[in-house]
Image 1 (cartoon, one colour):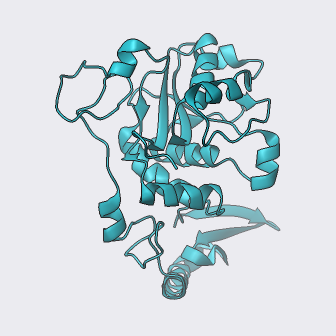
Image 2 (cartoon, rainbow, N blue to C red):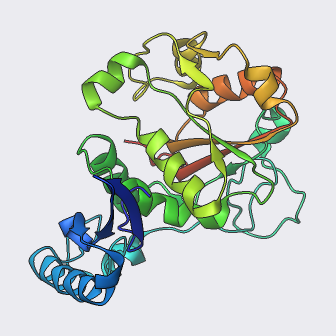
Image 3 (tube, rainbow, N blue to C red):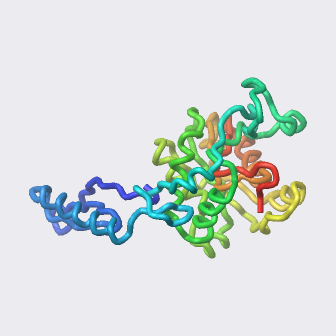
Length: 283
């Protein structure tokens, strides 16, 4: 699992001898001799974990303050997060100031009904949410994909049966080394037991940075930038898709993806993201 250390054992065959490996915190894989030494192995692993936790204690993913466990925010950062919950728009999840009823829709969705089947994000885009997203995306802190997924678990629709990350162009992946949306999708799929398909959706054209562009300019920038794999229809027909990204802003990128996925036969496409921009919160 991305970013979390599993303390189970994995058996490998080496030179005809059953060798066990045990995850031991920050120490990584520690080779262990045989099953008959399990008591000693567990004791050794416990000692190594204690040493690792002392040398490299868990820290808040946003500010670096020491915390009780991995993937935990410190109290000040936790209080700064704005958690999203009803009442909200039945179509896009935009929060309402007061309860308008379960089927109420915001003015934007009434004027231009969205193609997607909801935007699901645990938090609004703000200082702490932004810091975590940037540390993952540009700081190379890939373990934070699991931190993010742990918060997203509570908002993923129950009928989701396939997770598809928003793809990056190959040049961007070569420069960055990874696709943050794919890492989040992998972690989210692990936590919820939902399949992940990284190869279904492709970005065939490099697009400029969308920050600072207006809504129409964003849509133009991503028009024709995505494609589906050859057998996409067989993999999508009747499926309920969770389209995974790190931050939802104007929706230009995800709208282009949703259009392709539904055209290929997906019955539902919900957008799953760590944080969503509300109002003028975008930098």
